[in-house]
Image: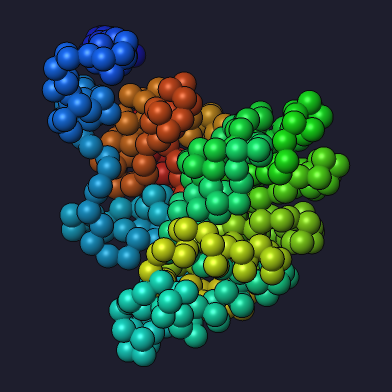
Length: 444
């Protein structure tokens, strides 16, 4: 390392340490603030921070981070303006980039057949169904999409909702309550955590993918609760690995619990035909009580779905607040998802290409000494950098070389696990991957 680069490294480290101290001090200061509501009747003035958004703790922390980034010479990697279809490549500010920041795994967002389905739906139904589905927002396209999802999973029925995040929140938040227990993988998505919080149920995490630890927890806890829900992801979006589903099914059956699998990233990715984690392990879908997924990744749309037995789906359709009180899915969102679902089943070669390219990327990354964490080489590859600063620096260095990949920073992951997250598309090429690995090694 040259003297200039060494001194620059020391300067970066000092600025980062100062930033961390300031963030910690800000948090402690907010925690120490006197609460005039405590201690009975109080005539103290209401703190100004209680009536100003610019005094909110989260906003103040954002300002500290922005200031620190400016001092470190790091441009904001978020909210970049893409001006076309984002797949294996994308256009940002008129320049082309190799793109690893989109969920367009099967390159179906932008496929002419999928786009035409959206246009046809607008012509037939307009741009909104203008009501909740229960009242007058029901359209044939909704029922067709739900029937196709139910058939894909081999279950009784399905329900689609306008947001993937809200699908988990409203399903978990409605079905479980104060007398229940929710157990989830420690790396589970935020939507599950928010749903569990809304439900009022007791919530306990278990070590990542550790079915033995889950079994032990249930042995200790099961008899203290009525309903018990276990929540897993089919493919973990931060790490690119997946659970041993058959073992978790055995545990849930042993303790008479419900099992929910979030297939947001695994549908279209796992299994020879892209049918998800159950195909990967050759498991009957009915062994999973709540099959959840999103329409925004492999299915080129937006929203979420639940598939399962009739009693579950009918219950949610009539009583789950996130469905009952929400406008129905727009027709131009439901129709392309249905078209993408058909193409997924008709063209399994897309899945095969995605899986082969993912394995190629992982092999090349590991061969270059990149820390890929838990990644198994299925659509999502992590590159652990060890700090938020280094992740942001690496993202910018690659962007300057024509490669768009997002940093994942604390608090989304622990500080020592900060990373870049590479999403692979079936339309990437080995040449693009080789170029990316070479650029990463130069920046390292």
